[in-house]
Length: 258
Ligand code: CAA
Image 1 (cartoon, rainbow, N blue to C red):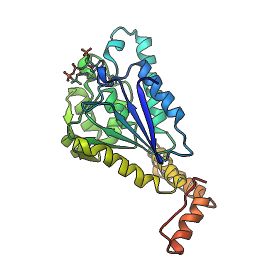
Image 2 (cartoon, helix red, strand yellow):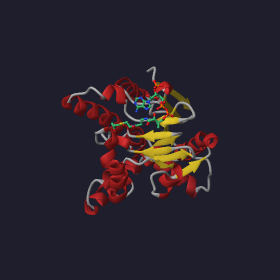
Image 3 (cartoon, rainbow, N blue to C red):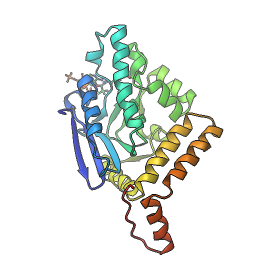
Image 4 (cartoon, rainbow, N blue to C red):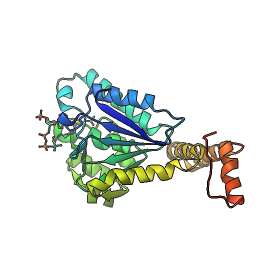
């Protein structure tokens, strides 16, 4: 996995996309490395994953334009599927994933951040979907997730104009939850991950599934999804532990994901 660095700090995993010479652009090899790194995350230990980019300048500057430049229609479709499969794995990853966007998040970079549960960024971050200027559509989920995350009108404006936006505008339109000075970004991401990791993993995982699955269906079906995942928490060690701690006025809780 030469294009991905992975480290574990306590219950937090940090996956760094590392192809600095191309501003961490995603070629097939990088996508395969991210996929393998996700498979290698020990979900018995890690309760929240952070994805970031190597260096001070770029999170991910998009899909690799060199690799895409000679693709046939069929190869283009297959390349889109390759990215979509990896990003869908992130989106449906059992534990929360935070994108710590430390610079350019263009095209596939904006798209990988949108497959994460939460986005925070540094003040030098730049977001955008420049694909129409390259003669293609966003192909790793951008046409779908941007419209769902901001508004369809704003997504269409950004995609049709291929205009990049800075961190403050990304914050204003709700694409990121918070903006930090560069040096404060990773500490903030780790602090948020730790706040997530201290809660019952079963509950957090079920919340992720309830929110994600519920958003795909109408409210009548959505509340049933919630009821099932709510019920699923009962009779677990962590439910008994969380409620006992409250009733015993005990601060320390021993959640074990069981
Ligand atoms: N693909 C391949 N290589 C890339 C790249 C990309 N998306 N983005 C940057 N690079 C490479 C550059 O070619 C350059 O390599 P060389 O040193 O070998 O020339 C190196 O990274 C540094 O880049 P720049 O010299 O261009 O750096 P800069 O500071 O002048 O500009 C930038 C930075 C504005 C991000 C600029 O590199 C840029 O515009 N990159 C392309 C952004 C883009 O269009 N992304 C969308 C790609 S399409 C896509 O993602 C499709 C999809 O949805 C699946």
